[in-house]
Structure formats: structure tokens, C-alpha cells
Length: 501
Picture: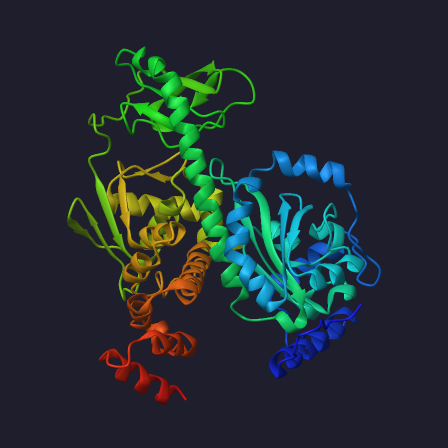
């Protein structure tokens, strides 16, 4: 197999990077001490792959499904509805740069691929075809399998692949999540020969996945509305008693009164009773397309009192580009430590709530302990109120006005100008909490990619005013290209570019 295709030109940086990675690979695989360690995401993937007995010299992806079975899987897979959007978003770049687009299911089976014919043909001898399985345990470290295993966007370049056969290739992938449950349902990947490597490739894939997840969310909202219309009589039949209409997966579609139960109810494996934390115990009644939840009063458990219009608490979080996290509760300032701000960030990102173990991992990584988190949350509840930060699971019971959520939603909806205006800088820049750091990097990279792809002069200018944007040469060059010659901002941008050079 060759690592070059017609029309591809090696850049010195790409060639140098490939040689460096090859040296690291050979040293590590021979048991030596490399002066430069592989990236953590790569070394962790290598360990998982070797533990699964993947042979770096012989392993090839297993061919699991034939064409007829692939067609059946495609027809039933939720990514089928967003395939046209992904082709529109990535297709032009794929043709120009010489890589192919790949979509997998949650197990890493390739269901679709698209791109230039020469790239598709070059990929066939190495098994980059429909029906093959690219999970880590099947073929070792690769962007598709590693993104699914780690549940995060991943770029794997050259000798970062565990199997030598794929060292002449580069790939970037991002998992796609179900709009209902949040579970990984597949992966979007772009793969090509080494000459197609570019550091912004991953950001492009992430931006495309965000658009796809936004469409899946809109489709879910339409289905939810249909369920509500068919079952409003059940809610009316509660006659003022606390209850809720749930989706088939336990997601709360409507609650009466609003806010008395969280946004998701854990469905039992058997029986009809479910624990509801502070509210007591619930009883489930099956419906054709979901569940009706009634409060089963035990031991005098009280229902949290809410107004008919829902929570009467507004928690405002301004965490983008701030030296100190700024928050207000119903307009009154709230003094937060960095740890408190990190907890609020993570809980705002997970409206369905988190267990103590999940929150500990989000804040402290694998070394996190639930007992530590319980103490931290207890202190936070004394600051913002126990009625705002609820337990079992940990979640926020308030209307949340968070600048980082607004910016993310604007990107997802394709409102790039609004996102650039909202983005005043990194999310909690001093935070080292894994979940916050990942969201910070993802938000910055996704916005940058979206602005560079389709931003007008005002949008580019907004992003250029942030600390990172001010030193981003590519962003500055793009802004200088689109600004009218007589625009007063042109002189500022020109001077900034001259200083950088």
C-alpha cells in the first residue's frame, strides 16, 4: 500500500511529525524508554488494545457484515437521517483535501463511507470498507475505535496507530450521542493518507457532529410532541396529584406540577416502583409509547413545592473569559470558589443528573472519590441552597442561564455569529477538572472551526477579540481577507498580523 495518492503533496511538517511518531512507536514497542512519551489518549489506547491481544504486526479488521446485512443496518440506524447533512458539511472538504468520510455504529462497524474514488480504492486493501469492525479490541488504536472507547473526539496520526499497516494513514473521529439517552450511537470519521493531515481536521469533524446531534435533537422533539398530544388525557387524569409522562427510556416529557421530579427517572428492571430521592417513591403505569408516573406516598414523603409555572429560581452562570467565576441566583450575587463553579458547570452540562461516582470522575478523574464529592456538594448547597442543588442524583433544580451552554447551543443551531458574540474566552480557564477541561477545549475548537468555515467579518472580529483569537494567525489572516479595505478594523488587524510575523 502507498501513503501517497495522485495530487497529494507532503508538507515538511507532516513528514517530520510522522518520523517522530515512528521513533516513539519503535522505542515503546521494543520496551525501551522513549524520551518523548505518546499522548495519554494514545498510550491508554495502546494498553487497552494490547490487553485485547491485538497483534501490531498482523491484525486486520474483521469483516462482520456483507452488503445485504449492511443495508439492513443502515435502514434501522439513527444516523441515516443525518447522512445528507454530514455529506453537505464534510463533502467539499473531503474532495478538496483527499480524505474520505466514514460513519460507524456504536460497535465500530463501518456502515457508510464517501469520498474521492482514488481514496476509496486505496482504502480497500487495508479493510477500510463497509461491514468491517474497527473497535479497539478488533484492530487496535484508531480514531474510530478509540473515539468510541474513550467517548471523546480523537485524532490518530501515522505511528499512533497500534497496527503497523495503518501508519501511512491519518484519521480524526468524534462519537455521536443519542439525543434521548446520551449514549454513543455511532462515530463520524475522516480518514486519508498522511499528506491529508491538518491540525484543524478534528475541529471540523467535531463541528459536523454537533450539527448532526442538533438535528437528532430536533427529530426527538417532534416525536416527543406527538407522544404528548396522544397522552395529554393521562396527565389531566391525575386530578392535581403529582405525576409525570415519561418516554420509553424514562425521560420526563411533562410533569405536574413542573419541577417536582428530575428530568429523567431510572426505570426498574422489574416491578413498577421507582425511588425518587427527596420526593419519595413513584409508581409506573405502562403506556403504548412510554410511561405514566404517579407519586406513591410512603412515610409521609412530601413533594417539593413548585409554582404552577415551574421552578421560581434563576441561576445565572457567567464562566466564559472571566478571571473569577460570576454567578447570580434570582439576580443576587453568589460567591463561588473555583471548585463550586466546576460542580455547577458539570451539573449544568448534565441536566439528567449524576451519581456521586460520576461527578467524582468528572471533577477529579480516575482518582476521584465519592466521599470527597459529597463533602464538596454539601458545602455548595450551603452557598446556593439545597433546593437548587438536589441529590439522588446530583442535579440542578432551577432555570439555568449559562453563557457556555448558550454558546454551545448557538454553534449547534448554526448561529455562528451569536456563538462568537457570546464567547468571551475559555470556560473556567484555571480549572483542571477533566470534564471542564474537555468542554473548554471542545467549545473553543468547535467555535473556531465554525467561524473559519463560514464566519463573516463581524463574526471573525468577535472571536479575534478574545485572548486566544488575538494570537491566532490563521484567524487574523482570514479576517484581513474578508474586511473591506476602508474598514477601520483593517489597520488593527494588519498591525496585529505584522507583529505576529
